[in-house]
Length: 134
Image (cartoon, rainbow, N blue to C red; front, side):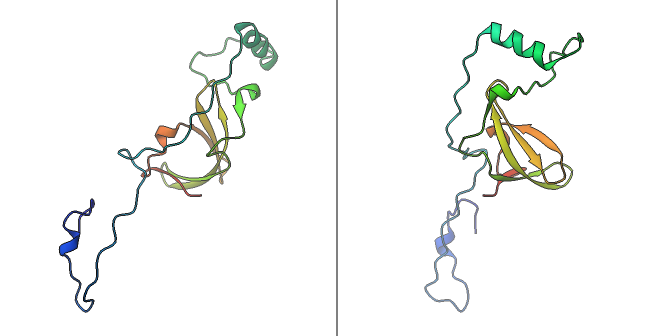
C-alpha cells in the first residue's frame, strides 16, 4: 500500500475475494492546509491604542517590543475554530481548547488542561504536531 493510493488496486488480501482498498482519508497537513476563513482585523486608531496602553500598565516601565500584549478589545470569541479542542506535541502530547482569536496579534489563544497556555496561528495546526480534534 502506498500513502497516495497509487497501485492499491493491485492488492488482493488472502481470503477476501473481490476486496478493494478504500481510498486514503483526507489528512490536514502541509500540502492540505485548513480552509478556514480568516477573521477580520479590527480597525482602531492610534489614539485608541495609546489610551489602552496607559490603562493596561500602571507603572512607567517600558514595554518590550517583543512582548505579546493581548488586549481584551482585540479579541474575537466567535470564529470557526474557537471552542474547539486541540492536541499539540511539545515535549509530550497536550490537550487544550482554543479560547479566542486576537486580531492585533493574528493568533489564537489556547488553554491546555494542565493550565499552560500558548498562542498559535492556523499555520501551526499542521495535522502532525498540532491537531484539531473536534
